[in-house]
Length: 617
Image 1 (cartoon, one colour):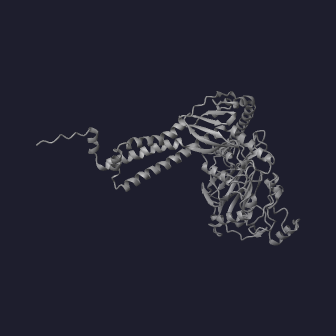
Image 2 (cartoon, one colour):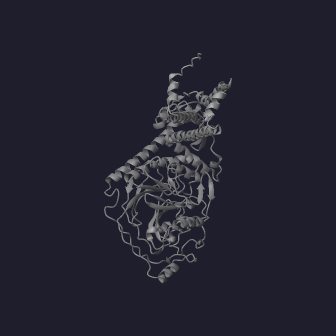
Image 3 (cartoon, one colour):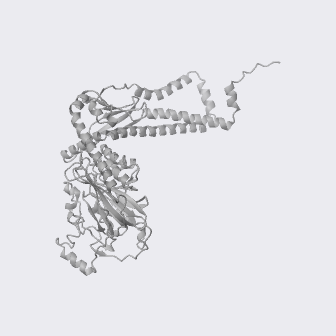
């Protein structure tokens, strides 16, 4: 009796069946993971979209395969530049209108000034705007890929569990049915092919080269323009390019002058000898203090006119700029403030520890002076800063297009940890942009960076030329929030438990916090002028001038309108005290001055109500 010969399995099949079940299972799962990942990547990349900005305009971003960034300006034509993304990825930028939030302001001139600032920031740093647009799309593509990949793997795993381990057999059985396999193939082709075809079918724009844009260099080198935009660029572009080139050259000279100043300085990194704290005379008894306060009380409210500037509107930078300062409470009405002066117990002396000094670079009130970014980077490198502390007002109004204001600084400080206390011209969106660069944005709690315990918060108000005016908290409420956070872990009998630094934009919030005795040093900005260093509350205070050369009534557009200041602080972490301070001052004529290192006052033994007015500075 004979049997029909069974067909011999193919060599590949014999090899596969000869593998251990665990090996076959591992290979199958790996292949499934990789295939689903590739499919998810293709769909994620070719469906990616994002929102960005071009100057003050909103813009919609989409992926293309032309390896160019095409900025569509509607009837005016297009601006075409090479894409910084890997080949063949390109970006289509459809420019929209200026958002209503940027135009619905009380003063149209303020809105126009903000628009001019945004246009200038875009054309002075176009490479930053282009790179931001590209990486916004890349981030969206990555997010979509991960989501789709996860969904696909979950669906496959669920199917395996539901089929009781028979999923492959069920699939083979279904695919053997007439018409099922072609239907699956067509469906897969549609899922993958439709988004890809939508991208591939977009023709590559030619345009014509623009010598005016090529003269900008960088990302604009090789840029092409189409339509009426070409005539506009040729006619008016040269004037704009001259302005941009002049601004770039101006700050290049400033950065070089900073390097030359450090090279010529004989104390570039620290004082040649340790500086002793400055001794501050204190009245001998309470009677003398009360007599002095009464003698200086010209307002009839019990506070010395020269000793209480807590609510002095004339010293407020926003009041100088015509902003609303009516939210300042009446003197003596805020329960969080300590009356001046209040005697506190003398602290017991502590053993001196070996110094552990950290160098902190301080910036504040840059107000979107994009040219100062490279200068800040140079000072951070030359001072060998361990940390950069930004005291707020990085932008003019905190709108989306003003991300370039943050980018211009962040791109120069990539090697340094940055902590920021946002100001009244910075919005919640500004904070998100800063977090996107890895900055630590203070939000009312205590953080530890480079061994320093820092407490702070954003300004309780928003005073914006683009988003209007808002108040989130009163200054007293904001101060109480930060005070509670700072004092939560402080032992009154242990000076070493105090928080090192209070970073707060508005000194009129900080002076309500420092009488708590929970913080060593307050650092603030907002006033656009130097204040201190001097004693404040039961600690010390230093107020920054503007790092962008901001002054009342002037935009920080182009060359410096006034002297810009960057400060370098040295702080002894072991003994909980600031030890030295110097300022890097950049004048409007591009000259750079490194001020001598100076000491801080000794810590007060009683609460001091410092005078923050120009007369007291």
